Structure formats: structure tokens, C-alpha cells
Image (cartoon, rainbow, N blue to C red; front, side, top):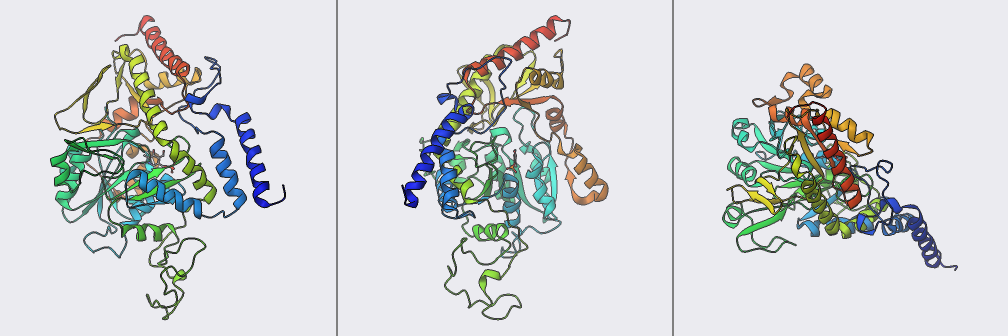
Length: 502
Ligand SMILES: Cc1ncc(COP(=O)(O)O)c(C=O)c1O
């Protein structure tokens, strides 16, 4: 064992053995052999799900010591773009960075003037959710216009968009698919097409969700039958969320559908040209597009004359945007590549776990309003009942959300505390109504015109006051889910029998 490849093989053999011995608690439920000790073992709401393959990939890439985004990153970008069926995916160091880069790309001076988002332009978004869906709008000097959320789906109330629109000012719609529940893509896109607006999809919580619309509606929006990876069923065009708008984002932080530790991606859906702007903002603002470690991809490195720089100034050091450096590392991408191969099974596990919880909690409807996928009007054990829009959604759930009804004999926070005592991880819907957060109150005090709200935000308040979610991630085993169901049922019934009212 003297050659580097022999030594590496031995290190990786030991790495696998080490991981198999140490990381038993992180296996997907389907591979788990750990026994669950009710009330003693913790049930996280989410977490890293991996086996020795990811650890081996991380160690292998670290031994190769490329370090900065390189061969693994390049391969992961291609594989992710191919999975989604988008033109390009660009890796970044978080979902928040992805949102910042996606939005910043649309401020590029290289865009036609009427499409460029400039300071003071307005962007329609919704009030409840994760802050960094919205903060890039403000960080770029644009004005977010907040519409209310539907408390049942967690998504934006699309019938508020026309009232939120301001001619000559509105340039884009930027929305998250809440907790793995696609927003009403058809109505949103029709609104965007009518007013020539960008659609930025924050797909951070929704990798693997699909949205279907009747073929006539999809054709009118410019979509064809041949969605990559998803067969055409003869009546509806189905695509992954994150592939309907102009640009979309992913987070690869551990609770998300796949992880590379810290990480994220910007997906360029149709217009290949946006890649150059996104890449420029990600990579210091530079004009050059050579990947790390490569020079002169344009074959005229010393032949450019841009700005007031002298002719022949090195293209590597020409900056066409006020950019950032938001790249991840190559070993992170190596982990992401292994996770991506497992994504279909992760997506299925999230769907199965949601359904298992929904069935198990079905007789608690007196206490809770359960979330519904967008376009569903009811849940039944046989499946969802769909509204008459002709559109349907298939959720790759980030979590299982429920809202405590006003007449329940406990409130949401009491339930959250009880679950915590029982070692059941739970979360509120991120920042709730963001406009009630200290940062946003301060912003309105400092700069009252920095944002706008449209009408009442009672749906966002309802989510803030009554919602919580528990896990659906692929590490959850049936005994864990049974324990969660049992704890929620017992807590609800005990509260009722202690004299609470319904
Ligand atoms: C909808 C949404 N967007 C963006 C983010 C930010 O992702 P990250 O934590 O990778 O920055 C999150 C985080 O969970 C999120 O839920």
C-alpha cells in the first residue's frame, strides 16, 4: 500500500467502517436498525439522513483537496439541472444566498431596461414565511408588497395580486412554495405573463414537488408536453416546482430535501442568459465566467476593453456587477451528489410520512385544521378532493402543518410545549407574519416607504398564532410516527376531559 490511490482506498474503507459504526441514527428509516424508545429517544422535526456513502464522498473529495468549487461542484450543478429539467443550476453556500443571487441577477444592467429591477420598483410577495425569501428584495432597494397568506395551504392569496399590482412599478413576483406545498402556479404565471413580470420561485422547501395544469392552460403559458423526467399523461402538463418561473432557488441545509451541510442552488429555468448574471453576482461581480482553476475560457482574456479600463485589461479582474462571493466548497458538492441520487426515495418517504400522520390524526378534526395541498378542497383516506381549477399538486412535504382551532381546549403554544416535553421536535411556520418581526417594525420606523402591505393580513396572523409543524423527513420510522400520533391524540383528549370546551 504505497501509491496514493492505494492509500486513498484504504482510508475510504476505514471511513465506511467508521461511518457504519458511528452514524446509525442518521440512516433513512428504511435502513434503520435502531430501536425507538418512546419518551426517551428524541424525534427531530428534520435532520441529516445519510449513510457511509456521503461520508466517503466527503472524505474522498477532501483527500483530493481541490477545496474550492471544482469538479464535484460542476458535476452536481449538471446533475441537479438535469433532475429538474432546467437550463442551469448554480451552487451557492445557502438557500438565503440563492435567493439573494436569484434576485440580484434580475437587477443586472445587462437586461433590457424594462425588465431590469431597479431601486424603488415593486415586487409582490406574501407576509408569512421565511425572512430571506423577502430580504433580497429590500437588500436590492426594491419594495416588497405583501399580500396575505391562505392559512390552509400556507401560500400567497393569489386573488390579491391584481390589487397589489402597480403599473410601471411592479417588476416581479417572488414567492416560496410553503413547506413543500406548491403555490397556485397557474394563476400566478397568468398574472405574470399579463403584466410581463418575472417569477422567482423560492423552492427551498419544495424540491421534488410537482404541479400539474391542463394542457391548454400550460400551452397558453408557453409550456410543452415534454417535461423532463415526468411523463405527459395526455391531459395535464406536470413539472417540478422551481421549473415554472424564470429563476428558482434551493436550500441544502440539513432539514431540507437533500443536504450538503450549508448550501443551496439557483436554477435558471429557460433563459440561459440569466446564468451569466447570477454567476457574476455569486463570483465577486466579475465579468469573466471561467470556473475556478481555469483561465481564458473566452479565448480573449487580454482582448477586452470594458468600462474605463485600459484595453487588454485581464478579463479575470473586470467587474460588471457589485457582487458577492457566495460559493460553497467542493467536498460539500460531493456530499450533495450522493444525496441527489437518493432524492426520489427521500421525496417518497416525505409523502408517505405525511399521509401516515394525516391518517393517524384523522379523528382529531374537532381540534385541528390540517393543511391541504394547493387546489385540494378536502382530504379523504382515499385521496384528495380537487377544486374545479383543473390544476393539482403533489407535495414533497417539508413538514406536517396543523393549526389549533380557536375552540380547542389548548392553544398552539401549549401543544408545542407538550410536544417538546415528549421529545417531539416541532416548529412554528418560520417567521409567522414577517411584518410583526422586530426587524420589519424597525424598517417601517426608519423608512416607512421601504415596503407596502395590501389589505388585511389576517391569514398570515392566523398562521403565526395557531400553526405548528412536525416532521415528515425520511429518518422517521413507523414507531416514531405512531408515538407522535399517540401523544397528540392523548394530549387533545386529556385536555378535553379536564373540562376544556370544543
Ligand atoms: C422558504 C425558505 N427560503 C429560504 C430559506 C433559507 O435557506 P438557508 O437556511 O439555506 O439559508 C429557508 C430556510 O429554511 C426557507 O424555508
